[in-house]
Length: 330
Image 1: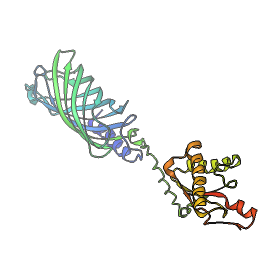
Image 2: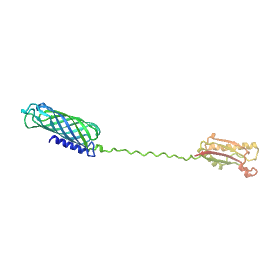
Image 3: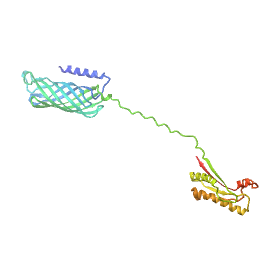
Image 4: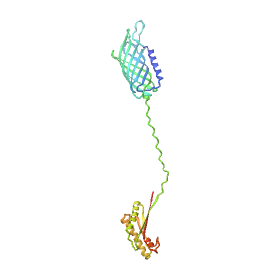
């Protein structure tokens, strides 16, 4: 195949690739390239000067990093070391077909990707001193770097070592190239975007005013027999109710107030009212466990009647001990 035909195929491939909308790197991508390399020949070939290798290639990415490529190039500017007849130095023509596996370092995308390669090649090249062609098999190793200006367009520089298995000789090349990359899957992966959590609802503000504290009251009214200061049995439940309330609300205190009817002297009735108040206090403290410092007692004698002392019924009502306890409850 002539070089111009080869380059025509490559250029056509590059133009076709630019029309493909799904251009991308990575696994499944195809790269096509055109290259030029300086060929450093072995001295045993009787070549006057080193030549150039121009060609093109295509490779397929088996993974995001590993590709398998096939290339073809033709030699130019190779001449024989010694003149051949009257025609001067002989132009030497030839071609090189290579199959190489390449490992790329770094991540697919815009930027630099160094690489190493290894493979095999077949060379068909004219004889320097006689007619016919030499056919040689080479083992290739190489290294280089690609720079991707975009996801798809790149330039490269490379150095390739070639070992001629048939002649047990080594040659090498250094070159540059440009190419296109398209059809891969690395850029088709859509980044998974975590959904933005909905903002937490604003805390509910309770605009209702706090309820006013409720006043709770317990009252005690213990009746006594005439001229007695002993607590009747039927009055103990009432006294216990008061004690339970004070235990439930330990911040409360109370004053037990003793009273009498109008029978007797003022001095006697005063002392009697005090004994009655003290009797109820002792039941609260000693029998029902209310702390002593929370209960006071006082006597008012006959000074504070609540009923008519001229009747028996009135006097019975006035023979009493009273107490009350208040507590604020929310």
